[in-house]
Image (cartoon, rainbow, N blue to C red; front, top):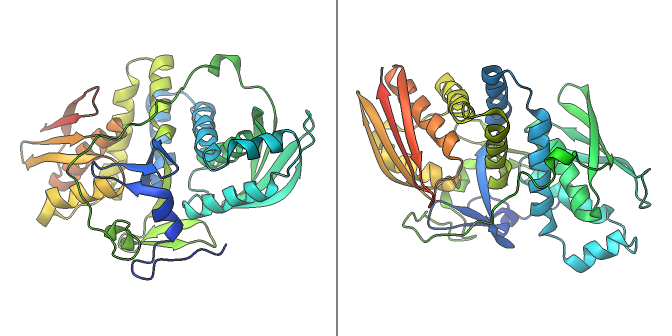
Length: 355
């Protein structure tokens, strides 16, 4: 994949041209600014869902793939003009070159490497599309991304099967299959609307992206994005991937789900996955949230007795609550309780108290 890097910050120019970092702690897709984007620590995802599964004792993979597949279908369709999709669906055009571009986009976004194995597209029930995935940032999310790509191009619902053929290396096949009736009409995604804010990030003079992105290194041949400081893996993904899963879990399994999500994230955060510069706590945390597209920090007060945090335009509020509680406990070596409020206009207020 031939990708130009910014000569100043080293970030692929496609990253800063396809995503826009706005002034309220948000990132949006440049081609479809109603689609909010996140730039997150990728190694968090699978442990988070394993933690939720252990707390509620319910397997989640099917639901995760179903929600993510739909989000990827919408996200990837924005890259392909409607008339091109129509030509593909009338079999006047081969979709493989576009699907290869999607595979390259996955590597650019830190998802791992996809490679073509075999395919058939004749517009009937015997069609299939098989790829390999190496070093996936999350197996369910990477499976869902390929399903969403094929559905976005063909307009046909697909099922899937996958297997791990060696450590960190998978074969995935998609094939025409209607989605379960109980999922139809559910897990809808609301378009995002930017609200002006006051969180401005320092910009790279060459590419215009956030200067803080220079911390991260793109290993395009492997599909990895890694922090030069922490060594942790990152990935770019749509905000519509996670919140609908949590909403669906709550609708299906009850009101205990938000607390389970917060608790799973607290446990993971307290394990030492995140860290913050305590000498400049508020400013450091504000920049980290904004670079990741998680919102605009307007208040952070930490004392031995507890912590208060306020984030405007907050994305993934349950994840943010768990991160805040975990960081407080990690920094002060105490146990705590937490309460939060999340308003309709996207303001998250968190209060952590020492126990």
